[in-house]
Image (cartoon, rainbow, N blue to C red):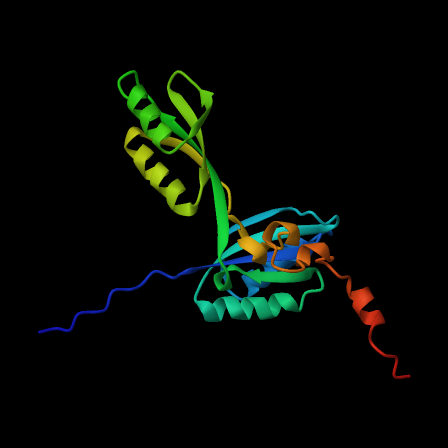
Length: 204
């Protein structure tokens, strides 16, 4: 009797956010770091933050904890990276957006629209033979919507990467909201390295 091979478990996704300096070629340097070390980036989103000159990158990396910890150590060496947030260590809220163009016929138009309503999808374009929907939610909701529409015929899809923020007081919500003492939101979140260097005593 031959021994059965254990089923392969899917590689988990690791979710990171980076606060980076809003300067030329920062994105290229960070993605090149992942590429050189063979890390697979499943999604990448970049946008501005509440701090002028600082952008936020949300990266989904395929790999185990060892992989993401190695990546974080390498990222910390980059001058452009101000702060790294490992979302696996805290509760967080995340969202994605997807546009799905679905083929329709007079027979299935009503059914397609009813399914879309169940997912709170919004129609953003109407054609004679296709409807384009916009859906926002977590990864599971978007995947489920696409699978529900697949039997009708998906003509095109475009899916953004995930974005995420930590929940509650961990997200630096001001103290007057949470009443848990002074909040990090009341102090600058980004301290230039030049400012930190002034606090180092001169030994010469």
